[in-house]
Amino acid sequence: MVSEYSNTAAGVDSRIKGQQYVEYMRLLRNEPGVGAAFCVALSASRGYESEVWRYEDGRLSEIPALMGGRAE
Image 1 (tube, one colour):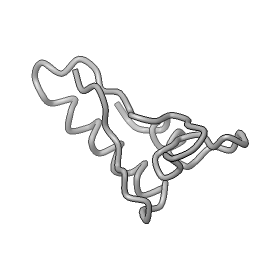
Image 2 (cartoon, rainbow, N blue to C red):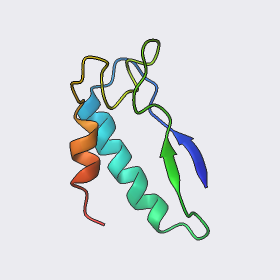
Image 3 (cartoon, rainbow, N blue to C red):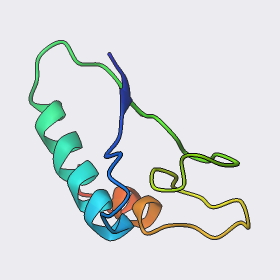
Image 4 (cartoon, rainbow, N blue to C red):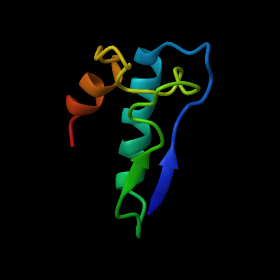
């Protein structure tokens, strides 16, 4: 189990991060023994703005759409 994954770099656009996460999940699917992987910060009030998938005002970053649209 991967307990946390995230690109913590503040200067990387959420679309790029979403694309990276999709690729990471594709790679993990081929790893024996990996049953789950969890993103570190779906939402946070402050301090993790560069990692969240949903902002506190309710807007979504591009990450959820990219992850939801990935081919299994």
